Length: 251
Image (cartoon, rainbow, N blue to C red; front, side):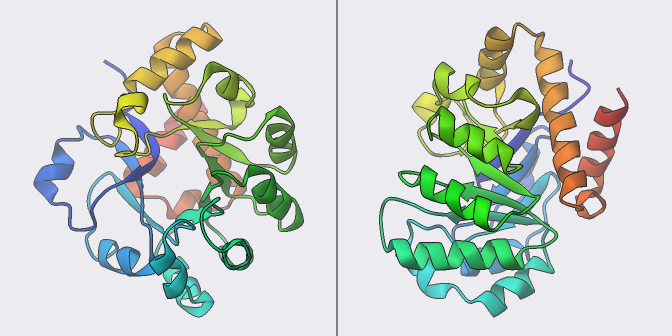
């Protein structure tokens, strides 16, 4: 048995999830993203063991863009150390998405920021270079190797899932990678049966890196510890997650 529970740094969970439902995740530590400020307001009133709620304004959801208010977002940042899901998407008004992402990068400090970049990976990297932030996590990043290298040089981390190709995964630096499921998206490809189910991903990364499964998971916790320290949020993580990243740094 692993000494560290499953870790999922980007998933979607209903804001009215019950304690009985979260118990079925078997102690997994899950970054639970929301898609709008309204959804975050509902979720943050429902604390659940193992879940860290993110403050979202999904770029592909028009209603979420309409709800955006930088003042309201800044107030939300006082209630959570995690921002997500935010970013740019090939669908919708690029200028409005860009305006919001710049506002997030400017206002979310200290925080971790899970950024969506579907169809606009280069533009996301451009913005991160112009508006650097120590807590950026590029979620399911599908930019090319040059984009990945630029993002890494800008200090970004990357959350990966089993739906990504070997080529996409190996383009990313091992010390900047953390796991995700993006549950419930494309479950047939991510092979995640629930939030936190990163078993298929662990096997893939173990194959690619020729490392034992235990070392793969430990590295992810170590990487998260480094990211949390850089972003100055380690002390604001949920107590159990604080404990786990502290142990990972010492092992």
